[in-house]
Length: 487
Picture 1 (cartoon, rainbow, N blue to C red):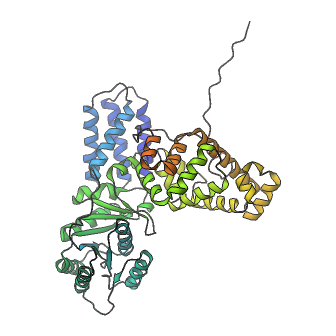
Picture 2: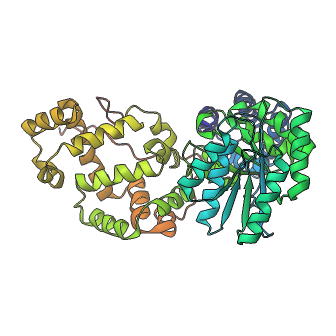
Picture 3: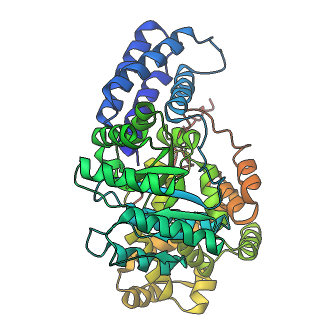
């Protein structure tokens, strides 16, 4: 998400970073580039105009600090304004009533039914009992879909294929939850291709029947400006309490996320970042601003790691890293854990500067699958003692994994570099070590207290990490000192 916007903003910051100070001239140039970047990201024009003007005024009024470069000053100003635009802090659900009733509304095709299950799974993690109510009685198989999802996440679903009154079905759901002591009711509703009077009247009847504590609009982030317009219409009709943006993983622009809150004055509370029920995140404006500016999101990364990685196994892995006994068995485990956390690309995008690395060849899911196939074709001895993998062994491993000798050699080389990096405890090494052994506090401590310097350049360079033939990382070239000739 936000790849296009992030790339253009980083270019702008880079151009101004080398300047001696902020002036009216270079501020004008920078804000013009920021304006173009936001407009290309499909952010609402009026919002862009107001945002750029506020950044410009902040830059002109900023107190010059000698130890901070103009680029870093600009990054901080843009970061502060982005946080203000999207909301200073996350907006929690109102779950004060028992049962709390959450009604999901939106147009057809935005992913409401799947989002119902994702939200239910999220609440289950917080130890809240949930009842799903199948209120989309018009779309073929909508009820079947919700029932299947309910079974997958072990959440009961109230459905009725005979009654054609959605308000009555919703009321039955609330009554059932009250009788059974369930704390939350999530009501799925039907969508339309566009907002019309019939849909709004039906939603108004459901609202009147169950008096929901939350009316959440499910909007497709990829619609950009149209998503903002839809949000505005639903808000005027139903007085929505918040927004869930879906398909954020498929939208490189992200304009809707930067516009909806300003237009509706209602917060984005969650975002959908994939098709699985666990691909669902609380929307943190401060963390999202950091991602947009290419500074990563270490806190979310460590939270995700803590959720997916077993503590006992993590402690063992941390010990192996310390003793430098990390082998291919451990590497295979890390690949699988990385997949559980959303894949290599997802993890890299949460590291400072990692978004640029994620674009490189060999950082996709296909590459990690090839790595896994190669490792599984090794013998126990080869996995535990990588140094024994000579040319004949590489040839046999290549045949067994359906890859090439070059690919096997590349993986062995990558693994060797990774082990060296872990030993040296560079930035990525510190993060991974903290994730696997130190928890959130350890990770932030490993990153220098969690405060990432503005405009950070990225991860330490590594040669040959990422596959695809040839080096994707170029080691930093040390300037050769000319030896003075003795006379």
